[in-house]
Amino acid sequence: MKTAITELFGIRHPIIQGGMHYVGFAELAAAVSNAGGLGIITGLTQKTPELLANEIARCRDMTDKPFGVNLTFLPTFSAPPYPEYIAAIREGGVKIVETAGRSPEQYMPALKAAGIKVIHKCTSVRHSLKAEKIGCDAVSVDGFECGGHPGEDDIPNMILLPRAADELKIPFVASGGMADARSLVAALAMGAAGMNMGTRFIATKEAPVHPNVKKALVEATELDTRLVMRALRNTERVLRNKGVEQLIQIERERGAALKIDDIHDQVAGVYPKVMVDGDMDAGAWSCGMVAGLINDVPTVKELIDRIMMEAGQIIRQRLTGFLDGVVESAPARAVA
Ligand SMILES: Cc1cc2nc3c(=O)[nH]c(=O)nc-3n(C[C@H](O)[C@H](O)[C@H](O)COP(=O)(O)O)c2cc1C
Image (tube, rainbow, N blue to C red; front, side, top):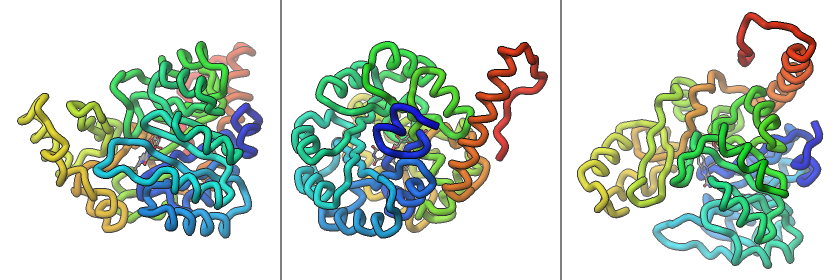
């Protein structure tokens, strides 16, 4: 399939694996890129720029295809040395960066001088337009369904994607709630040039996380995510668990007076406990509503091949069939 996104990034399929803390290691990024998508290493999971340089080198050993690095500009307990992370990306020869969180404006000159293409993740049309204005090459439009930080506007992709299509000149991918061929075809129909998946890629053989995490995703339904940290204007969609129930209880008690320190134990240092140790009750970790559409743990290649094969079928048979006057009696189901 050819779209503005496959052309921009030099990839075979318009499928991106979004940066994911403690998930986006070289193993997953390389698997996605080898399968024809765009794999992304999560920059800040690497605790220093030197460690990121090693991770980039490891990824390069595993794939000769393009891959990217995610740089997240979120409020953290201590600000990382972003210019040094960018230097590691540049020196590692990586030509694609996914930025997220705050605007990447102040880092754009350095990224552009290194010939790096920037795709910025945005949860609103106004932030997407800002990204376009400051020279981003593409946008990842992240709807309210998404795992992680959906922003504070709560606009789902059914509205956000066509709104973005109406306003943007640069290409964009649909992010949040994307799981299968139906998601891809719907995203393309709404004006996107591809899709970005987070949660779905965790439930793959190559995702280097504890098996308990994959099992939890297969078992979870679309009802099992919770929004936390709204009072801090740092809303995050996470998978429900004991730690998250405690967090929500604290939020109820503190109300608008909530401070990040009140929930430190439920949000800080949770990722290694969940992703490495498999402690599924440890606290808040990002997870999308799309968990309700995840029923298996395929290899990344099986997942991507299946999506592309079924997307062809949906477009060629189902949709063209409607034009030809074919009335289907059954709804379109995913194969998995
Ligand atoms: C476990 C997990 C960790 C994530 N960590 C990050 C991160 O560090 N930086 C970032 O920009 N996005 C992060 N995200 C968001 C994803 O890149 C992606 O935008 C999101 O998962 C899309 O929604 P979906 O989960 O419905 O596919 C994370 C998502 C998950 C599920």
